[in-house]
Structure formats: C-alpha cells, structure tokens
Length: 210
Ligand code: SIN
Ligand code: FE2
Image 1 (cartoon, rainbow, N blue to C red):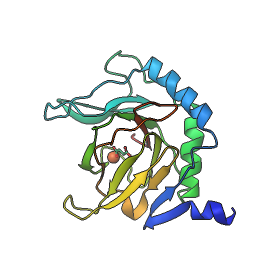
Image 2: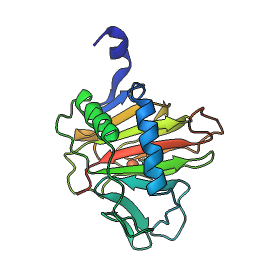
Image 3: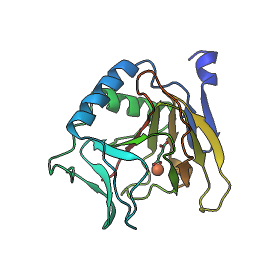
Image 4: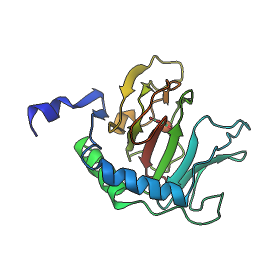
C-alpha cells in the first residue's frame, strides 16, 4: 500500500474505518449489477412500525433482506412486495464488502444481507443503532454511491454528540468491534446531481442478518 492509499484510509474512532474511494476501481461493474438488482426488486417506500413512510426508498439483495412494516423491523428471505426471494447478492457486491471488511481489519465478514437505500434530496435517516442482527461480532460495511451525504456517527446513547462525516461516491465506511452498536444516521440530503445516478444517493449496507 503506498502513502497515498494509506492517507485515504483512516480509523476515525476505535473500530470505525473510513475507506475513501474504495468502491471506485470496480464501480462500473457495481453500478451495472445494482441496476439489475433494482429491476428484479424495485425500490419502494417502507413503513415504520409507527406507521410513517420512511423518507428513503428501499430494496435488498442477498439471502436475507431488511424489512420494516407495522409489525416491526426484521430480516426476511422473501421480498414482501413480490413474495419471491430477494435477488442473489452479485459477486461484485460480495467482493467489495469482504475486501472492505478485511482492509478495515475484520477478517471474518460473511454478509448475507445487502440493504439498498435510495436518498433523494431532502431524504434522511434518523439516529439509530443496527441491532436487528443475530451476531454483533460481525461488522457493518456501508457503501456510498451517487450524490454526497453528511453521515453522523454518534455514541452509545441517542443523545451523545455525533461526528459528522461527508460521504462521497465510492466511499466505504466499516464499523464493528467496540463500535458495532454506535448510533448513526444521515442528515437531510442537499440537492445535487451525479453523472451516473442522477439526483440520488444509493447506500449499500452489508450485514450478517441471520
Ligand atoms: C443506515 O445506517 O441505515 C444508513 C447509512 C447510510 O445511508 O450511510
Ligand atoms: Fe444503520
């Protein structure tokens, strides 16, 4: 690894690694695979357990998909919209997630779920913990594509102060270990346009759900 690459990879908090531009080398492949997945399992607005529509639109690929409805949050093997299994996780996705986890020092990542969230300008994600998974020893790999967003990494209580990180097309954030249950979220997106994805930010969240 040369000095330039090193400077693009930073442990910003214990067990939280920011890999700038990590998805760029294989982006054409990833974007083509993403578009095929979204054809098979179209983005839709999920409803929170409280009955409110989320501001992002959502899909999944992999053996399990994260879903939300009036009964709560959970992982499900089938797309509730079509009743069929979620599209398989493309090998470009799997490789990216494994390589990012390994680069961040998590040598054992075996993701079975890729959540796809689309943020249009104004969409956001409130502070939350990822805790619908069975195994918190597995890290989370989060890939940003399209227009920029301001990500917030918080502490272990909702009210803790947050670190604000701008995330750009191709950036990958990996967290696990001591930081696995940190609160995190995304501030409302500002209007912008990306040459490949238009007025949209796609976030791929790789996790081991089951
Ligand atoms: C999430 O944690 O659900 C979203 C993360 C992101 O969009 O960057
Ligand atoms: Fe999350």
